[in-house]
Amino acid sequence: MFIKLYLYKICANNDSICDVRHINRDILIGIGAKLRARREALSFSQNDIANMTGLTVNTVSALEKGKGSTLNNFLLICRALKIQPKEVFANDIDLTPLYTLPPSTKHRIDITKKLDELVNNSDFFQTPKRVAQVIEKLESDKSESNKFSVYLTAYCKEGELEYIKEGNIKRYVKKK
Image (cartoon, rainbow, N blue to C red; front, side, top):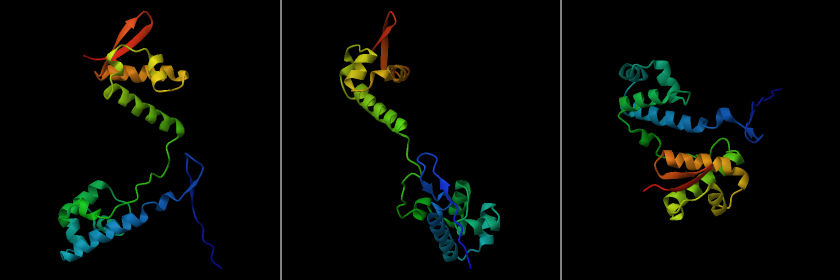
């Protein structure tokens, strides 16, 4: 009687099961097969590739089997085989991230995009604006005013906005 034992890792972000050890296995095996086919088409041995790259025969063999390697090793082998890396990746790869971003990060990205649009593609900041006015314009929560102050200060450091200080209050305006 045989029992198959599967090892899974619980994804840190969303408590789902991820087969993280095998997520790229088929892609790596395909890359290795393309490199091996190219090597054989050129009538090179793995030892020839090792001599041209400074890698060991075991490293070349492992890469051809889809086993772990580095980008450096991959590029060395591409050079030896005179094959452009984009040719090895001719087929599209599913680029779905292994983990999803947490809601707080998605929210920050959404705010940043909206704020970028407001700063760079509108005339909103032609007249000085307080943080509260920016929050109101973007229909955001007033409790995030500290975050918006940080974001707006970053635009000032980047030279896109400047601020006018009136007592404890800063008003942000497009830099002229």
